[in-house]
Image (cartoon, rainbow, N blue to C red; front, side, top):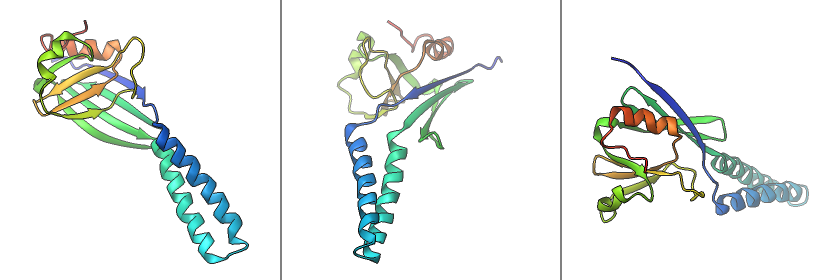
Length: 165
């Protein structure tokens, strides 16, 4: 059995709310540090809390997804702040119902189904839209932004389930 391996790294667009919160917590941290010299210990505690919140928001503002295809299995990893990596999904290609571009007519019969939707794509609609919708085991819709090599690798295993129109 031949083993195939393809990886694809995608940077997710950060929502404006998260960027605003990161800036807010950073400004509050500086403000509470300056207030520490006038007010005292309570301002220092608030500075530490805001600093920790600012750190975690900075991790959430820099998110990348890595898709790995290794011998009939798709693994999706979330990389936060280029420091923390976590595997968030493992998908078996035998349970994939369809993988097609978001605007494809092949997805018309799946539009009215109530499935959980998970977004592991770039986070916005580019021109032209290169996101793909993956319907997995009739239980969830997964949005991806794979490169052509990744799609070709999955199509070589499941040619009747993968569309590139």
